[in-house]
Length: 216
Ligand code: G6P
Ligand code: MG
Image (cartoon, rainbow, N blue to C red; front, side):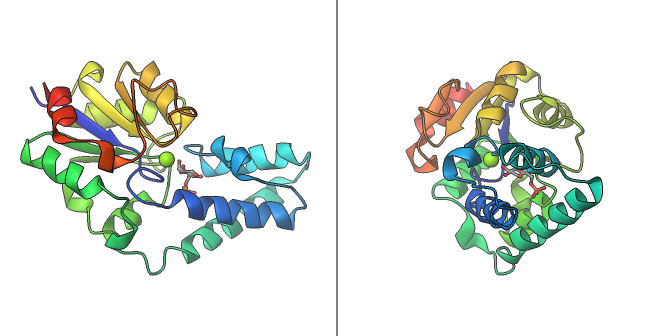
C-alpha cells in the first residue's frame, strides 16, 4: 500500500524560515517591539495573520485593522524581496535525495504548508513535479496545530491518516500531525520538537533504511 509523505515547506524543504524571521523582526523593530529567535520559534508554522497578532501582543500594541493590513502587506513584501533570486540552491541539504527516493519507491508526496507563497517557491526551486498534492495557506481556514492542512493533503492522495508521515520543523506542525494520528518527523532541534515520533537534525540524517521502514 502506498503511503503519503507530507512535507511542510518553510524550514523543511527550503531555508526560508530565516527570511520570515528577518521580515518579522524588521516590522517588530519598526513598531518598537523586541523580537528574538526565541520568540520566532512560536511563529513557525503559524499563519501570517496570526503571526502579526502574536507580535503585537508581545509588544502590547493595539492596532486598527487598517494598520494591521498595511503591516501584513509590508511584511510580505519584505519577505518576497529575499526570494527574488531564489533557485535550487535554497533547497535544504538532503531533501532532494529523500524526494527522489520516495518517488523511485512510488510513494505519494504532498505539501502541507501554512504559507500563501508556497506554489511560487516550489516553482522557483524546480521541485513542483515531485508533488502529487499541494495544500497551502490559500486552501485552509484553520492554522496548525489544527490538523486541517495535513488531513486535506492525505485526503487528496486518498491515503488514511495512519498511513501518512509528516515532516515538520515547527512545534505547531508536529502537534497538528499528532492530532491527525499521522507519524510525525521533527526536522531541527529535538529538544524543541520533542513531541515528534522521530527527530532528525536535517534530511542528511534520514537514510534509505529509515524511509523503507516507514514505507513498510
Ligand atoms: C509557514 C511559516 C511561517 C509563515 C507562514 C505563512 O508556516 O513557518 O513562518 O508565517 O507559513 O507564510 P506566508 O508566506 O503566507 O506569509
Ligand atoms: Mg515550517
